[in-house]
Length: 472
Image (cartoon, rainbow, N blue to C red; front, side):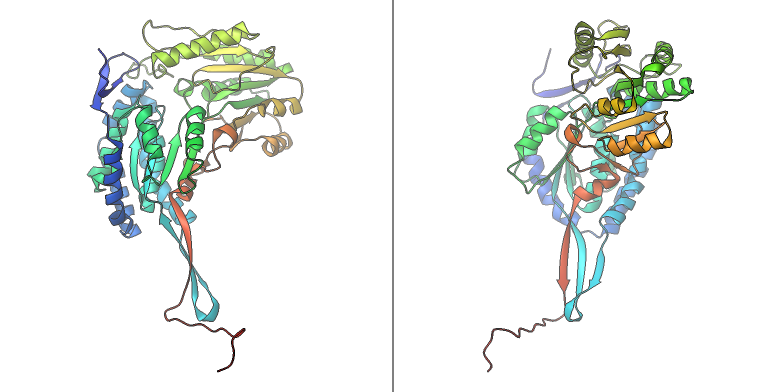
């Protein structure tokens, strides 16, 4: 029986209920955050950093338990959940360095023996809207820079992974960050919309689908006082060109397309292959795909990928696969549902070269579309044939071709002989077009967590006006 007053989270791999809690009150949370913020903002930077470093230690104390919770609520294998917890802890020192580099103070000489200064101020109350694929790491990548800068934070986790969001914030409170300063908003889309539009929220930091991100952008278009950072995924291309290392190519493709069951914003969605390499590459990819172990988070031996997040997502992916093969696509590897009643799907490959109109959407799961091309210009044109622009990779080719690829690809992450996913937290992370609004996260998150303030200063008033006055 459903309970409309509570949000309930279920384990994808088993269907069992994992967690439930009542929906939150947006006005109450924002009021408490607004009251708590000035005291935090007035703390010395060193004090704020010290609390955030304690947070990493608190996570470390329950590292394995936290990984197990992530695995249960997302369905991802335990080995992958452990890497997410490692990223949560590593984010602290990366963010400390980023704040010093991106928002440091400067003093300059000014006229009349005065001085000029550049400092940064926090915005105030920041709303963080997190996704379900990395329910700890990705919101944490907003929360830590925001707190270091002196902001208050209200986290609205995905309604599909609220238990991880609750656990994440508990580590901040145990580290000594005031509870009213880091609050959890439990709820679904209605609560998220109310938080975004609340007049006392000063910034919205969002990770999720393009559809929701564009709706947020539209809602706040008449409110230029709110900082808005959007990370909205991609329809990412991986181009394969001349190389004899076919097994390595296949491994990079499978890693790019099917890690996390394809539920990464940087996952390869479109594989673009040179015509005379097609048979060898696709044969190797298909063979490797057939060897992928799909299973539950705690299976032994560990699977490569688990289920997708829920049955609705699995159904949508199955429908997308059927749409592609019903409209000119040729199935190379069929998408199957190996466990009835649970959202497990097998990786699928579809050759869409013959499709008259290829859908430019982010199919968020293990569904890879393949396009064959004759020349390198056609490969670049096909890679850019999208409204998104997050990640792109060239596998193979020579340095001159990579230089052409890098210069002409419209994406915020451009790689050579590396997968499309697995971006470093020590670098900026973001895209263009439907992938983002030119506010990259990760190392550059400091840019949108504080704003620059310039000052000219003297210890005593001093002025001289010499034009346009009558003599005394």
